[in-house]
Image (cartoon, rainbow, N blue to C red; front, side, top):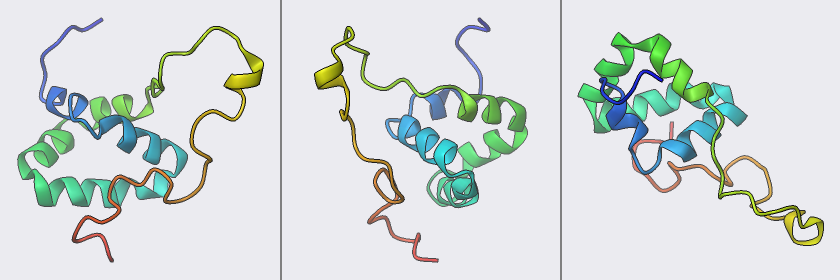
Length: 100
């Protein structure tokens, strides 16, 4: 791989990054709201994203690693995880500034 380092590492290590990535992958139209929120909270991170859009989109399109997959156990594996649906995994719920 390309190894560590780079302006987007801060984003990759952000605790909400996987949730953001899952949200944007399941509903690409939320990307603008995500970027607006990042711009409000971390303007320097938004600058890094804008300067490295290809790398950012690459990161956002990477598969999201859920909890490590257990060995095949159809009875318990089926139905595990939250039901899909808008708002189920919205990391911005309850955050100010997202009403619009």
